[in-house]
Amino acid sequence: KEGKLVYVDKTDFRIKRMTRKAGALIIFVVDASGSMALNRMDAAKGAAISLLSEAYKSRDKICLISFHQDQAEVVVPPTKSIVLTKSRLEGMPCGGGSPLAHALTIAAKVAINEKKVKKDVGKVIVVLVTDGRANIPMCISVGEGFDPVLLPSINGRPTKEFLNEEAISCAKKFRALDVNLLVIDTEDKFVSTGIAREIAMAALGNYYSIDPRDAEAVKQITKKNI
Image (cartoon, rainbow, N blue to C red; front, side, top):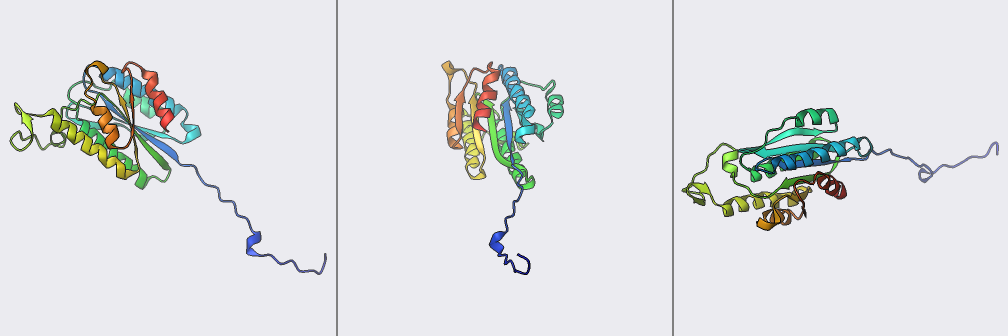
């Protein structure tokens, strides 16, 4: 009524703060070495384009790292652009060696950088599509050369045990990064070495085994784990 005082306490105020939902960053790390390289690459391409087509809803970004010959390479930097992704993925080279340890290291660096610099990245998922058969050591990838006298070797080449342990050691580092490692194994089950599974276990990640020609499987498995 007129003339009466109204007392307002601070608890009477309600402030609604609009928060922006952080999207996920999906880093595809694709083994472009060996005879099944084209199948693995096509599967990863399809998954990346499909996820980006839905990015306007989820704010997700993708990145694609290819590894073959002596090094891993960031082919598609973290982006939401379908146009950029398609143009970067056209005519990608395949074949040669498999620098798996270097690929895991590059993926970790991209993940760390995005989480520190970008404020719109929440969950980071690294999707490793490989048969796990590494044959290029980290020292060669970084240009230092391989010393068969100091390092485990047979006929001047690094042993499989050394290469496997190196990749597993790199995978273990993901535990402290708050990054999920998803390993999609494309190795022939009849001659399986089981290294891809060991890499997933080392990173406390998830493991799936698929037919390398099944492009749809990569997309569905990735979406399931976002």
